[in-house]
Length: 550
Ligand code: F6P
Picture 1 (cartoon, rainbow, N blue to C red):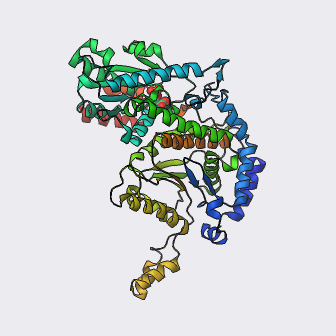
Picture 2: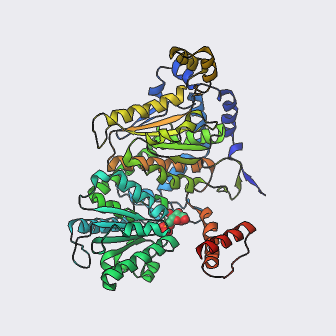
């Protein structure tokens, strides 16, 4: 099936890693820690805002040196510069990739096609500031003069996951009287459940869609528009609907005044867009000062990423470790576990960021890749997930490297809750690394008074293989600045992986086929029209569903 292959895995640095991996792969982290008391200090990057402990990885200095050589061979520093300077690195769409411009707090000029993009970014940011303040202060009010206190974001994918994740993460910074809701899914339930909770007179709908052609968003927006017009009349639309988009023509066609549109640009990918006007619900909820702090946090990580040598660079180290496990150990999953309830949507957000960016099989040379690209990312808040999928993380046959995200202080320091939470976060990393040998398990069982037969029977079940890698990111408390830092870390880590795999992390053509087919199935479900010829399974499913819906 496949033609010419891209052979990043045939380069000198990759080959060196491969042959060293064969010798090194059985190395036990327990031994590495035992032999080197300084290990935690050496494999650690400590910035003012965040500390990365990456010592619980199956690495030594040599592995790191080879990984860094691979990064240099793949010209990572040059590619970082290319992104920051507005080169069109999104080659399949011929676009620059400039989410970093959205938070370029130094306001240094960045050119795309000879034009400095900073003035328009600043203009839109000023518009977001003015509008969010007017809503918060009750200067921009609804059609009947009431304050707009229910903010409903209608959008999907990148036009939803970032604002939802960030508003939840920063809930403690919300204005007291404002509530945020999100409608993303085309499932009518998503719309109904939100509309049942809000009052038309006090509701502002933000229709967010980069393209303004996404069927889910437009269908939901139409339903919400009708709901509002039924309650308050057509004239109310201008006071209750705004749009965030790159597509003024479609916004106008939909019936939203372009005066009420917040622009962004094709050089911002949907999943990298929460720093743009897509962040409008965040700005309304937490206020523009806090929104700007979030931009500052991301900017500080941008500067770290751009200016720090590769070996001391957080996103670079995380990206290299990901390639090390994914392509050498064949560990094809990755779990992210925030130990903070406010960060509960971070894994969901990262799923799009990571898998839509790097789930690719064609290289930048327009050839098929011969190695694994994006791992499967999943996760959820600790300690909840310790009681669901952690069984597999500890004793499953697949090894799943983990990231633990750990704030030292909670926004809700009640009793000893947070200390228990922290103890669990740290215990997981240690348990995964050390494991428990069969001998240790047997001794424990003996001490617990089990008979010889019971000990022999149970000791394997009770043992843990250990040597399971994890990173720990520690910071003081989740605030707007730190959230900006954290999300920018993962954006840049994703970029590093894409560079190493020689893929374009900034298109998403893999989502198109299913959309196309849905459009052809829709008329078949709605009436007796026949679209394209389907396989027998799809044909039968259409028939059964139509019968059930009668
Ligand atoms: O279908 C995938 C996708 O294109 C994402 O990349 C994007 O974030 C999402 O759909 C929503 O797109 P839009 O913002 O154009 O509505």
